[in-house]
Length: 100
Length: 340
Image 1 (cartoon, chains in turn blue, red):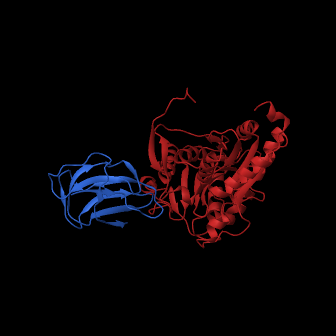
Image 2 (cartoon, rainbow over the protein chains, first blue to last red):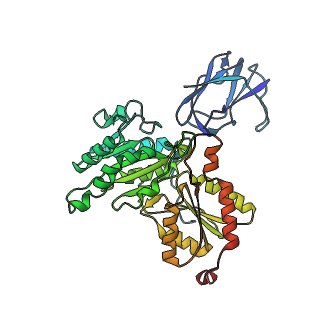
Image 3 (cartoon, rainbow over the protein chains, first blue to last red):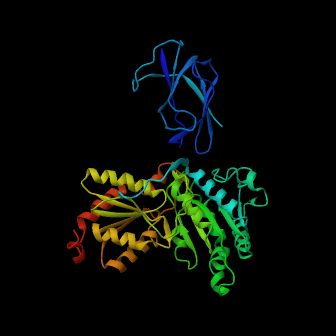
């Protein structure tokens, strides 16, 4: 199954900047692994995997801006699953996020 | 404008625009100091001074005690002695404590000494309501507009914050640079090339034909929301961001009102003796009688209560109502007929 990671809803934040991806394409994240760090106007948001997944496609590279709720990357259960066409609705990957 | 060359820009948070401006100016002029609460290792209440302490050191980026009268007093004194201090007052409400050194000394120094001394100090402060209650929410910039010798600016975008902070740090007299709590989460485009935005120039944010709305700071966003609602109602609103309150760019506003025939002023502060009063009076002096209305906070303290706070503040629906009434009751002065 294909999943997406979206910008989590953080109070007062409209837009974030991607600070750093913590894995290359094909990397398998286990539950609890740090996937990506996002920068808000005053804090860093750490997005961690809430379920295992393989990073397949980054939609917002480090340094790019993205609005709340919009997609950042696609992941899948297995590393050989076909990716969907662009703009196709995808299930959100379970994530935990922590604001520091 | 079709002939305008699109300059290269970089997207950044509002705080980063201030950080960049102050950092560039500090590198250019070693007389610039930053004084304020938490401006040092902490990087500023909104992290708008991030990195400056590490780069320029504790002698140029100085943490101060919670004593605004002393902070502004030290700033004005240091300015008279040849420095260019930027004094950061976290809440505009507490600028009141610094009025004596700023208004009685800083703003009058050049006049009092026949031009021998000047006080090139920038007081940067944050206005506006965001759930923090009666003494942490006020917008008192209109109080300062009437002080001879004081300049007051209130940018609304990251790009303007950058260009106007740079201009402020090059001024020869005291400047009050007003930002807003709700501007800090917003990002915007800032020119890649070094840019200075001179004071006294308003900016047309939205072009319209039926009504001119003047505003500043965060209320630009409310004005834009209102303009979209008015568009659905068949009313075309022009929005002018004042940017600089003292000096005021009356030419740009009068030129717009001459076309639209109606003026709505919008501010988050009180309407009594507010920014809008001054705008309307000066446009009338330029054009003769006009149809005008003021929109601002209700005459009440701004509560931290989540129901009472928005009830007190102007929002898009109140702007829309005021605009609709204004358009309905608009008188048609002789000069506007020939221009419409």
